[in-house]
Image 1 (cartoon, rainbow over the protein chains, first blue to last red):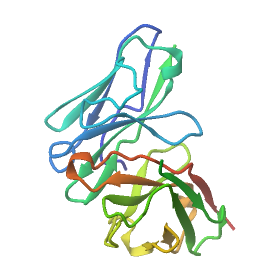
Image 2: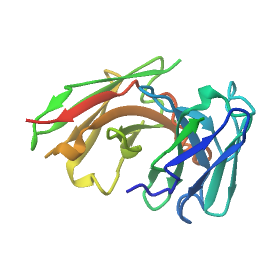
Image 3: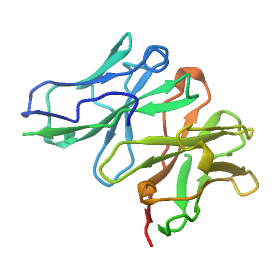
Image 4: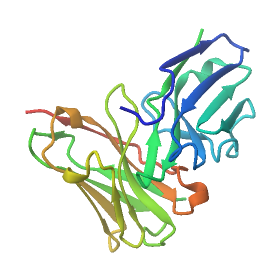
Length: 110
Length: 123
C-alpha cells in the first residue's frame, strides 16, 4: 500500500485544466519537498516538478505544482493528448529515511 | 552525463535470491554526493523504494523488505548491486536503479534512472 494517496484516475478534454492531488503525512509531505514524475508506457519516470513547485528546464509551464501542509497537487493546464500518462508524487519520509511514492494517477485525455 | 544500466536474470525461481547490478557511467559512484537507489514497480502498480546506498557506503533499507534485502557497492567497477532473498511471485516487478542527491533540499529528485529490468518470479 502506497504511503502517499493519489486518485487512481483523472481525465479531461484537450485545452482543459486538470489537477491531481497527493496526500501524505507530517513525516513526508509535511516535512519535505514534493516531487512529481510523469511516466509514459514502457519508460522510466521523468521528473516534472521538484521542490513542490519548480520545473526542470524543458518542462512546459503548463505544468505547475503546489503544496500546503501535508497535501500537494499537480495542475496541468491546456491539456494535450501527449499528456496522457501516469503521474506519481513522491516525497522523502523522515521516519523511513527514504522516499515514499503515491500509487500513481492515470491521466486520460478524452 | 551520468547513465545507469541494470543487468541481471529476468527469471528467478520462488524461494531463490534475486541479484541485480547497476552500472554507472559518466560519473563516479564514490563521489559522496548522492544516494544510489533501487526502486521497483510491479506490473500495473506504483513505485516502491527498496533501498539506497550512500557513496561512502552507508545503507538504508525499506523496513518492509529489510529482512530480505542487501545493497552493496563496488567502487572499483563503479557499480552497485541488489540482492533480494526468498522471492515470491509478489516480487515480480520492473527493477530500476536511480540516483538522488544527498542534499536534503533535493532528496526525492531521482535522475537519472536506468531503463529498468523486468524480473519475473516463477518456477
